[in-house]
Image 1 (tube, rainbow, N blue to C red):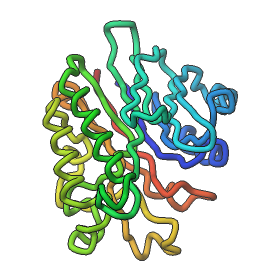
Image 2 (image 1 turned 180 degrees about the horizontal axis):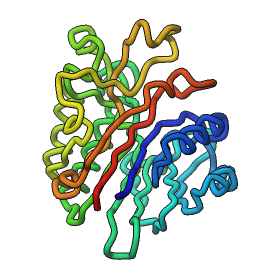
Image 3 (image 1 turned 135 degrees about the vertical axis):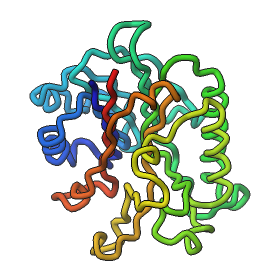
Length: 264
């Protein structure tokens, strides 16, 4: 049995107290973090080691983006893909367990895409779509049991957002993003583990804007964070849950953690 969590933490050094709380209370075997917002030498390795997470793979950069995977079980860094095609630190892949035998775990932070869902008016939106296309070409060649997790910055289903009609022209829920994400899904036949366990149309959000003062009462959430697995691996997932309370912790991220348990 192994449990794997993913969380866009929005600055790991600023939010290390709530990361520590999460690890103490939920105790996943592996935690994938996005938006760590620090260089590799600035990452709080010691704080994680004190909590028992002594195995790390960190791909960071100054001030922005960055991903890190921390683990209580041995891991080997497997890959770093530049799907953004500009050198930004948005991906790190690891292999859990023995080399050549273990699960491949891909940790990714997909660009948000700016405010205007138009490639001509907003280059950031085009970069996001191109990022997905590069990921799709990669996924087409995946030939080992793989779990890809992280902040995908797309809420694909109507039930993944607080108001489908109002958000159809809002970046993260536009038809072109949903179609682009579907092509990525089809390229490897990924299983959306979250929606295997929390079935559509059940409410399922992982992000609430900082602009919403009472996020719980207004509940204007979106499901931007995902855990997708190769079909055989997905069939071994026994439990999936999310920690909404973390959105109310002191100095919270605007995202919450997702956790999946596998019977491997």
